Image (cartoon, rainbow, N blue to C red):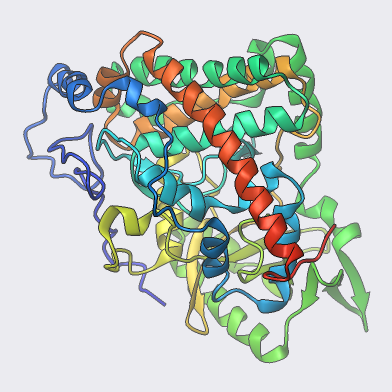
Length: 482
């Protein structure tokens, strides 16, 4: 395991490969306190001058190069190193719908957006900021908050990359739910306008104030229009019931007097004894990456059982485990999740083939903490059998807005919420003043990204059809409905 005292990776103040290099950011992490700060007005002017090199209208471009890689081939290459027997489940979830395809095809979209016009302003980005990767979870104070909640692909990169993926996902989800093209356009416009307004607001705030900005679900309910308020209330009720003690009757049974995680093959399966021992050692090492208080607290629990559990779409086939820990009584339990971490799909477009992060689990944890206002205090990292993992709580009031039935009005309102949250995340890391200077106060970026979103929704549907055809020809294995 990489020692927890290994220095954190440098975050660049520059830009992705092939983009303009900018010499300054808004408080880039790990910078020297003795460095002369660049005035906020000057940074804003830098961003505004970028419009001459990269017109805001160019963000609407979506044309692919003639040598665009085959999306099916990219997906197949991304399957390398995954558990072979689980790949058919991943393919089945991707062929189920264009939105399912987009969720699993971060590697495809990363290649597409990296070749489009960009400003070269590179905060830490989510890397997979689609509509389903925002949701509820418990803060350390046990408040229910909403924020970005998936960071497997997080990495320094173009802010436009995140925003393009988000607006494309909104248009694809809207179509899937029966929204008209005009309603999809309104939802995307709501998202981009909210991003623009929030980043402009935060750019004027002190760096410390930005770090405290958060959105609690109670306040979101109060501020939201009626259609979205009802969706939030339903999702919040479900999230508040998703805790470890409430999971016991469903996930646990007794075998020869000992608690065991219930098997549900192929989604939840036993771990061979040798692998379980390696993972137990890895969890002991993970404790060293926590702060002293949480290390002592969690050290009071005993590992009872561990199982492999399939999660998500993009993660299917990567190693993911759930560990049951028991404290001083039968109902004092914690579920931890270990998820395999691999190099971000963005990495090659930022710094080529060079290995920049020594530990991919550490990358996920540190960038999650950078992008979220409050994070799971049990976030940490470890490794086992040569694979790197990050660790977090498995059931900690996590939940999402159900997107499969959300109507057009609620979609537009929710799109504004997630646009605001994405801007908050970017502004917490670097470049907020330059992004604000670039986007300005007009609707030019809104209009441009609306054009992009519609065009990329068309491309997503075409790529989804290509994957369906490849499956029909036997090019990829598939398991439907799992």
